Length: 297
Length: 228
Image 1 (tube, rainbow over the protein chains, first blue to last red):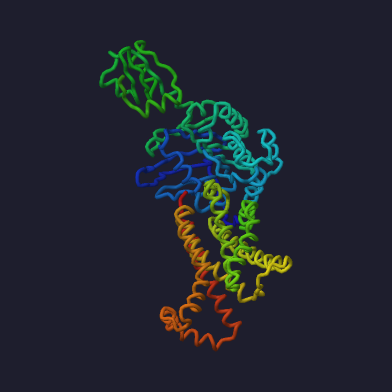
Image 2: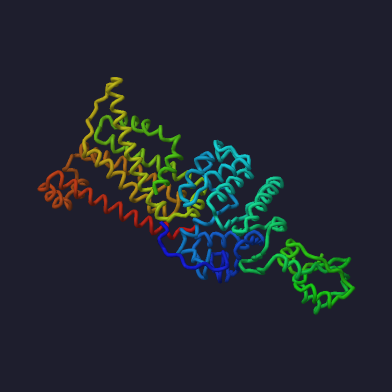
């Protein structure tokens, strides 16, 4: 099954290079980013930005038009089986058979992996409070997600690919899922690629953030670097002119003043000095301001 | 591949008991034409079971999950063909069981002892059905292929019966429609008459094999290009 000789792996566990895919009404254009070993990358962007398309291309569920995808330093098409054996996936919806029980479904999935660890799976079921005899259709959305995670954690996967796993979950289930992930990422051999449009999911767990919009990468860097570099500036409207507006990624004005996001906080400091307040942004600020650009109330 | 066949059987746990029921229905419906009963039961049971499994795949969009697992797409395709033969075997066994039950209970229906040729004919009918249906299914998915599947099922079950009926009721071999069909085939028929039974069976077996292999290759080609 895995006969091809495997070349030496690189430092990036996942690297996407100039990935392009055209549909009738949407295109993924020259998408490039890379995730180093042992880190968590949040893949953020609004609905329809191209997050799921990128993940489907990585999993070879869609066929790329151009570009290259390497997982563990291996081409994702030439070494598909070897790669998928070391990847775990969690999608936004349940794709397991609803009519089957947890144990029957797990038995089927286990038969495809080289290193299925029954003990780990049973421990996960116990920790997640899942009854192996329960049918998948009887599980809540949060429990289905936990089952997907239990499967994902039981075959020694080194890379966990998650496509909007928190979407549609209630706050309790979402929090539980994020807590499980926080424990999981303590194992530095594991890397996580996590797509979401809920940026607060990434506040605690992400090391890197890649932001995609309209099928193009708007930014991809270490989360702390982004949060240190960007700034939210608040001040009176008379500070804004055509030249200063150029400092902003996006700006919002109303009768009381303006609030905007700058790409270079230090440059903004030098420009506005004490006349404006500069605060640390959240990932949500960065996403929202980048999406809407200039806006007047 | 075997694990995929096993997966489909697990999904069909609740539908398997319908196989003997279908067999009994086919036995009763084709009581005046006992040669067609086995063929109808085999085709109907195979199609019913493979369709149930396909519906489960479609309902849960499970092909996304299956194609994310470490296996080749070809395995998914070949497992469906293998499953179809397994269901056909189940169909034949169900028909035999029906005959045994009818005999033991003493239901006044004539029982035709099943011959090897009948089993072979039933398998050929099933092969024709899946050989045409599967490439369409693997190309377009369940929703867009179901009408074709239903038409193929009806044709596979009733073509044999209709042919016989046409021959018997509408002037036999002198019927003009049959003559149109038979005339070009007369050379072949003449040649076949010079062959022994085992030779004819071998030719048909080879034809069925080539047909199934071509269909599987086409399905593989289509499924490899499918996007999810």
